[in-house]
Image 1 (cartoon, rainbow, N blue to C red):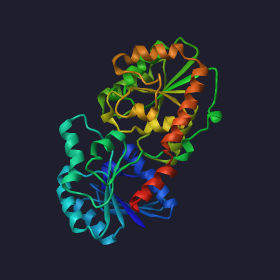
Image 2: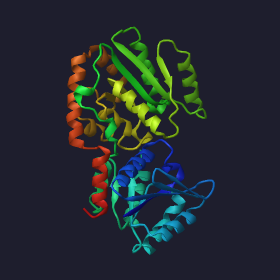
Image 3: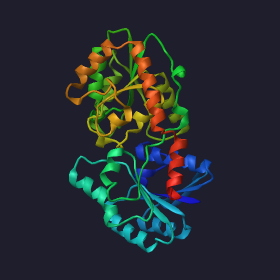
Image 4: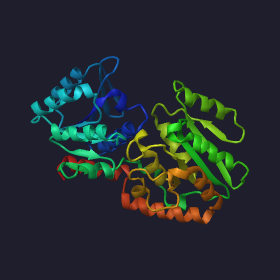
Length: 362
């Protein structure tokens, strides 16, 4: 079996870090372990070139047409589409129709727009121009939105490598409760709320609060907060270069989450990330209690918990929760999360198995 992951370079590049890139990269690793050939076919690059990395052929093209030509020439068994520019979607629909005997074409849905119109366009395109393969949805609300008409719909959680997963007895227990924010220094990711919470806890010796921050110099607000944190004495700030993927970056995240008791993840809206946030799943795999907001399907994924806090009074309610928490509360939350992980079954090995069975028609 030979599979091509196809889409815009910006949304799919193997060496970038983001929800879509991590999803496809992790799935690709497992497919190769199962003896399946994997190519990336990416367009929107600066030049046409082909690289080989870790048994994956990375094919970069400047134009959409050149990428389609490769798909036609290579005769893949399956073409899994990730993201296309709007201007290319009609041409691609015609291409799929004329090449329906060549391969099975699939699509993976990652987002949930706040706009009703954009959401309808995003999900109903495959209704107007059907795919002859499967439509994969990474959140339950996406799946529920289409399941009445999309008989080829598959609910597939983002995969998390097995290395992230801990047994309850493997999670360190210390006198200090380690609270962590890991992510972009961006108001949209809730960094201002994190700073406010950490300021209120600075004199409480039970807690060790850390911000592992990724900042984008081009974003003025992000850069301003980054510079402020560098000079702030009351908050532990570790600058993280997580713009490019490497095994070392993955290992760094695994180690941070392994040492974290409570992860703060105060999204302002879920549309700023993929619809089942990857960091939420990674933290759960590492048995971190996650303080976050009950947007989308997060309550269903994380499970019933006092750590899910309404956005209306998020800062005050989070501070009250933290000030009343005990180590025993954390240990009980770890046990609950461990059970939830067994139910969700989102290890990369398991997700890849479900993906392969879906491609085969299972």
